[in-house]
Image 1 (tube, rainbow, N blue to C red):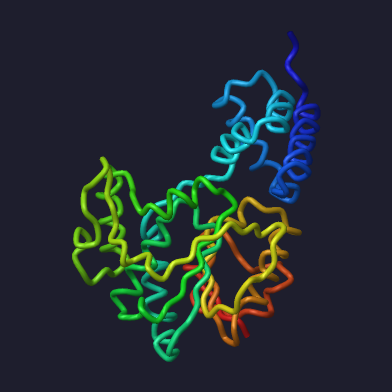
Image 2: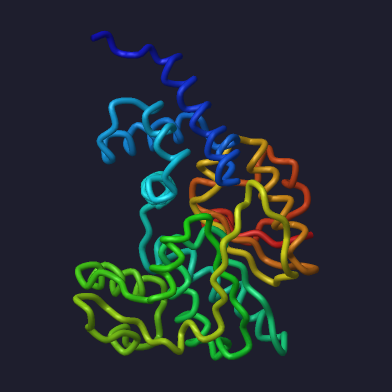
Length: 275
């Protein structure tokens, strides 16, 4: 049997993406084609289908298969206090400004399974700001959001989390924030008391609140330029006057339609402020 040509695979992926949009209103049409192709081929292997077209046929009829597919193609690798320098920059530049507000809102866009939510909540707690905060944590993957809500993380990752926490300038004892339970690390429920988890797509949904700080890291690297500009427009519209935007270390505002609408706060840590 001959293998499909690259162009045939590309057509199958386009048809799959269109089927997902029409059936489930999840829009991957403006995701980076190379990244999406890699993820879909990985999903095909993981799910054991002979072709991408076979996946398309199944997801049209079986929402459970679609949920399995989503779990594979939308879950990025995450870590607590990932890129510790970013959190040091938040302590230095963002927290002093948030302290001037009696209350404020934060949007974590693409929160995945919740590692960044917990990290930011710990940071706010240590800066005595958590009780003033309302945090929106959003993602397109319902299964990831459910995991994030539970606040239970693999116990074998705690060593890495702890090292990152100290590099990020943590001022407490990291083990005070969790207890070993359910074969994992259960993080203090008080950290999530001000968090609202919600299903939200940067590809199809609109702004839902004015915010003072948005963190969207390692999400836009999977978008093409059109979708990147759409996401940046949402962030710009959501941010209050002089609000802060944090991106991932491989992401930039350079060459975007919004490069002139944000000041650079920390270029190495991809931290920006609305002009």
